[in-house]
Amino acid sequence: MTTTQSTSVPTAAPSAPAVGHRIQNAVIKYGFIFVTVTLFAYFAISEPSFRDSATLLDTLRYVSVAAVLGLGVTLTMAVGGMDMSVGAVAGLGVTVAAKTMVTYNQVGTVAILAVVAAGALAGLLNALLIVVLKIPDMLATLGTMFVIQGTKLILVDGQSITPGMTQSDGTTAPGRFTEGFLRIDRGTFLGVPGSVLIFGALTVVAWVFLARTRWGRVLYAIGANPEASRLAGIRVGAYRALAYVLSGVLASIGGLILASRIGQGDVSAGTSQLLEAVAVALVGTSVLGRGRPNVWGTALGAVLIGIITTGLTIEGLPYYTQDVVEGAVLILALVFSFTLSKRRTA
Image 1 (tube, rainbow, N blue to C red):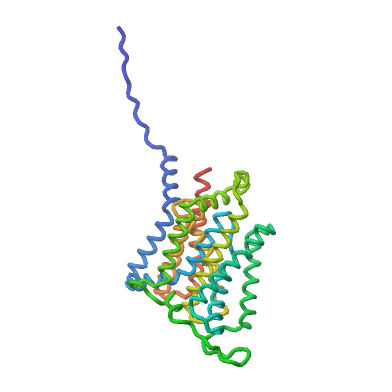
Image 2 (image 1 turned 90 degrees about the vertical axis):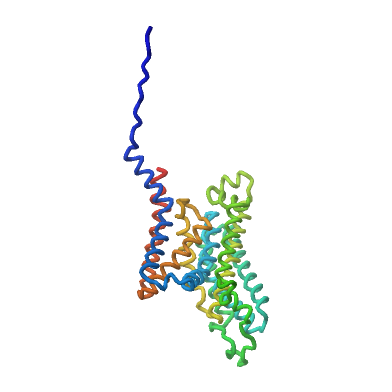
């Protein structure tokens, strides 16, 4: 009679490459969140005033315009495009709001409707150029940006609109920014600025739209493979047009916040918003290692930009150094999104 002896095979210890792979995955997935938390903790410890609730709310208020514009950029990135006209559309919104209330003496509600309509028209223009005339997204929206900037100057004869100003015909502007309109940014609800509430509400709505509806899933599918989407029966052109119209509307809402903040029709308004909006949307692609545009990533990118700007300002660093830091953060985000993630999938 023969007996079979069972031999236990010892479990091999994880190899060094496997451990390194897990570390790399963790860095890709959580690295940018770690950077955000670390910077927040650093400024909170080194600058006591940074911990004040008023400072934190002011930080969110400061980035609300760039964040709302970034949500629009995120939608266009989802379909594989890029809207470079969002800053100009926001600036147009400031001019249209001032023109409506100060020059034409209309109430704030009329100004809001006019601004949103202008944003939708700008989005339709982008859609016409991109979907119908087949111009590449970035080139089309760059052209639109210059057209809108020029149109804005033509509307106001190249001068900012302020209450009580002398107009080109020698008369005095009869209107002013209404109190209700100014509360868009300056007002508070339960201590939270109105612009922060708008930022939060639009973030949730955009997330539900992109992540929880068929339309959002179709936008992502088009961005991943437009030809396969077309062969599957999806109206690719219509969905791309929708993304740009929504981007224009979101940019106009950012313009409403900006107009309420400055309280005049500044002809230079919105000029600096484009780079920040694109930056927060690109930064957002690295959050949780997704490597694709996503709403919560864009929101976190805006918060990070706000933390950096506020923290460096409190520490007394010159304003011109902030661009260097923001640029370095953007490069770091792109490394997370593209370089490291490609190595993981290679």
